[in-house]
Amino acid sequence: MAKLKKLEDYRDEIERCVKCGACRAHCPAFDAERREGRVARGKIALANSILEGEVGLETKVLEDLSQCLLCGSCCAGCPNKVHTEDIVAAARRQIAEERGLSTFGKGVATVLGRPKLMNLLAKSGGNLSSLLFKKLPKDSGLHLRFPAPYLEKGRTLPPITAKPFRERVPEVIPGDSQQPTVLFFTGCGINYMYPAVGEAFLKALKFLGVTVIVPKDQACCGLPAVSAGATKTIESLADQNLAAVNRHTFDYIVTACASCNSGLGNIYADMGDEFKAMSAKVMDIFVFLANHGLPEKLEALPKAKERIKVTYHDPCHLRNQGITKEPRQILKALPQVEFVEMPDAGTCCGLGGTYSVYHYEHTKRIAARKAGNIASSGAELVATDCPGCIMQLQDGINHAEGNQRALHILELLAEALPDQG
Ligand code: SF4
Ligand code: SF4
Image 1 (cartoon, helix red, strand yellow):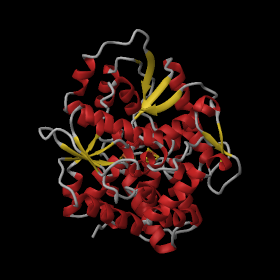
Image 2: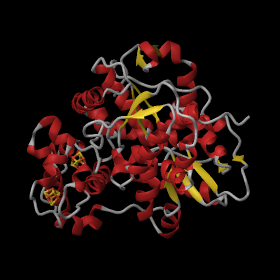
Image 3: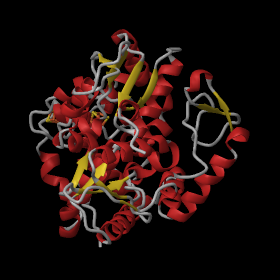
Image 4: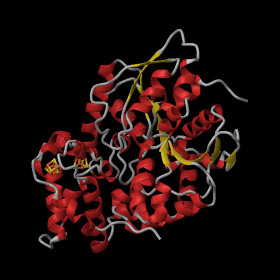
């Protein structure tokens, strides 16, 4: 059974914070508000006070701890490599255990913890799409027609599919027996909102002759529940995913979502030996493709006469793991792409799970800076490796009245690969 770490287990990590303040320069929450309480050292001090019983769990404490995107950006600039994101997540769990989940957190736990209910709600949303949403110009997303709890009317949302990706494809797609077998962990974003990314994933792996398994019974990785502090939901989802994965024999678990990659590859790794073994097999799609010779094969394709300018946004959950080179390597090798780097490609887009639900105005400020950087690169497209970032980047671009589109690198890759019947 999956077991998450408690706040108590982070005591050593908390004590490693020397309050130097180097994290200020890297924290998007601080940048959005310029308030000292928003920066990592303030949150670590608060977590320590909760641990020592020096503060009660009053509303102000909850508010301060909600002001974190769990992006891990601060760790990069921290001399002692303190993982504030893990400490804040553990503090939120402790608070939820003592005070109960917030109303939003209860909603997240109810839906994510019941995959059949989630499937039903998503399909209903897909079928009622034209009633609920209005289309934005240039296929840049949807707006809600009516205000809804926790969702701003002016927020750009992707369409929800009436037929989830995992219901469109067989569970096993055989390839060449000489090639590895990959288990595709799709995540909810690809399954319900970006099925074209899932199709593109299959096309890329078919091109390499790889056998792909898409377990029908995989569940959400649990990252939204991490943000909400819903301990039991995260543990239950991890158990469901371990059981789904263990029904198959494969070489790698491959993700095309940075958040799923971090959930399965990092958070699960701390949940017990069986989970650690599973986490060791987790790999990002572009690491897999780069390791299996795709850039060289792409370089051999004839270059397009007219190429489109594309820039890349580093999702925090990949950047934190040092995965920055491989997605760029694939993009640069695409025959129809002229790659341009944008300033601060590695800064957070501002989504941050519950942060963007509770603090949408701050989220918009963070996204506005990102939209400015995309525009200054001269790119027409911003490609990334995370459905959540795609949604957030497009929202930022639309608020800035830009005309760029956000998309997954796999969609560009699928365009470049020959049809294989
Ligand atoms: S940079 Fe690290 S050690 Fe310094 S205050 Fe921030 S979290 Fe603490
Ligand atoms: S995890 Fe991100 S938002 Fe939270 S304190 Fe660190 S840099 Fe700031």
